[in-house]
Image (cartoon, rainbow, N blue to C red; front, side, top):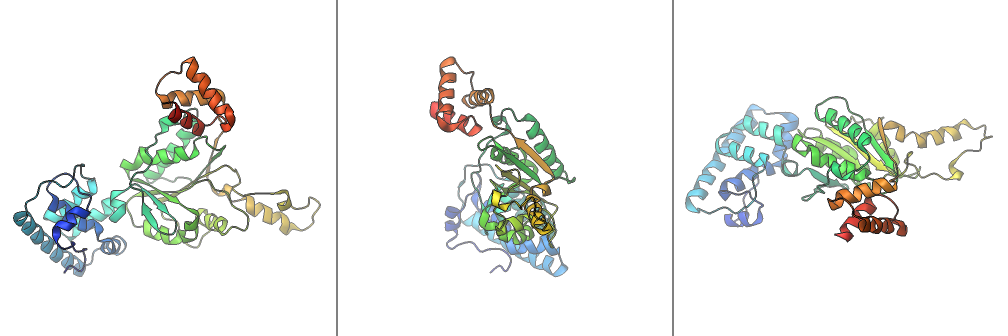
Length: 356
């Protein structure tokens, strides 16, 4: 039994039925997947490197896998179990399985990662990291009228991908104006260059240090995406995000960048009661207020998405319907927006879905 790679279920054909395999001879793909599923081994190699003793054990077990592959291919010849093309990580893993050594296995993990990181480009984190098999494929073309904001956002992310200094980014503006779409479009545009999108849900905020340690040794570039932020001053999530952006004991990895969206410029739910008496002589009262408002200042790049006007709304509807608007469609779209939904990108998409 292997001490490094997961075992195949018994009987072996069951492993084919349970797996999502590429097109082609199935046994090679299924055993190659064991290399990508060896998460403990991958993390050890990525964080500690390859020692001589570990290299010897890896090569012994690679040899055993090759012998198992030969037996399966000769004794149970099967046609393709998959219909999709292989992923780059799968092709690389098959090459290591068939003819690689310990050093090539280390190179596999350094190029493609392991587990879900080798197969997916979007994840949810609410305390536990979960892959998103079918992420929203939205593109920047769906955002009409925000060319300046999109250009700045893309320039910053391209610097991040190239290993240059990049800034934590806050996108703020009216609801439905395209902030979240812009962030998701980054994954669509740059996944092939190694960009990965991790949406951090509120329950995951207090587990951020653990998440960063998982992401730190991986070869990909990760956007930590925090959507629709709004905190109360006493909210522990406020302090976790503040520490992530600046001032934590732990160091944020170089392959992690924070992108957040909010309807509030200052990210804090404020009331008049929160404001100190203007005549107060207590400096601590004003210091507390400034601490609340300082969170947004920790984002180096702040992009404003103003509300849609009528013209921008109709342009977006035209794009989504993929045609010029005739007078009847134009009037129907305006009525749809004026019935309480307002002019926004979200309303434009809702109208386009309803009108098709």
